[in-house]
Image 1: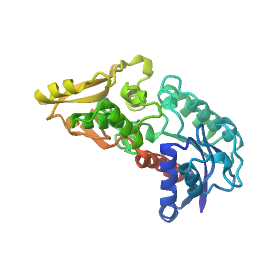
Image 2 (image 1 turned 45 degrees about the vertical axis):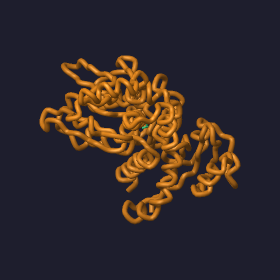
Image 3 (image 1 turned 90 degrees about the vertical axis):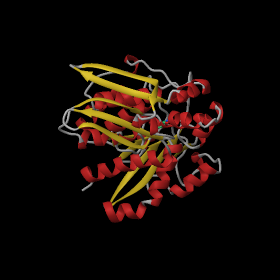
Length: 345
Ligand code: HSE
């Protein structure tokens, strides 16, 4: 039985969600996919780090974090290593980069991804920074090292929108897309419509594990912007950067504006879109008031949806969870299974 040794950079909401999934699915992964996972390193800026080449007891690591103890003190492990030292010293064959996202610089995640790929490790990430800013380079580096670089969870968490567009729509040309690409703000708009206050809902979105570590990334539209860039480059074949695209979040949407829209039979949604025509890309992230008859107006809570316009199939919509602990943890699991199916046998 193949055992994949995994190093995790980041052990926040997504990392802990992934650890819970690996524990819950341990037997079914062995029975149905023929592999096991052993997490051999974890490094988190806030929660400490542990290197344990023969495997970390994830139940114990989760318990320590819940009790507020640093992972540096994990019994029998080596603690006190930053991410770079963890990647340098680990015996892992897959790096899972689920650390802090910076959509403007892509750092420090891009350095982690490059370092791991250069060492010949497969890399799975949900971090939008490296993928939005440096995808062609990172894919080239992975190819040159004979390893995989996978990032399904960067767009719509575990809802398989990237693999759908790339694998299932292969042969179609995708001409444009438009959708709700941020779970936090869609959840907030849904609850604001019911009368809850902005600050209270944002706090709830953080507690539920939807929001980014710095929630400005959600409410100012930067997270949706990262996803628009990834979809534009990966699915439409564009070469755009975040700074090329106008971006406005939900911070200017007031209860009064929402009431006015409702009186006109409309609803506010934060919409990310892009189209490509003769190599020219037009893209944006901005709030829009949609008529209630628009299918996107009915997408509520942390659910996301994206509609692709294609040459052969017309319009195709993917709807599913856009954020959350288990949903994003699942995205990483799906990529791990993909690596096993392609490289593990
Ligand atoms: N903060 C993001 C969202 C997480 O709310 O959509 C998933 O990318």
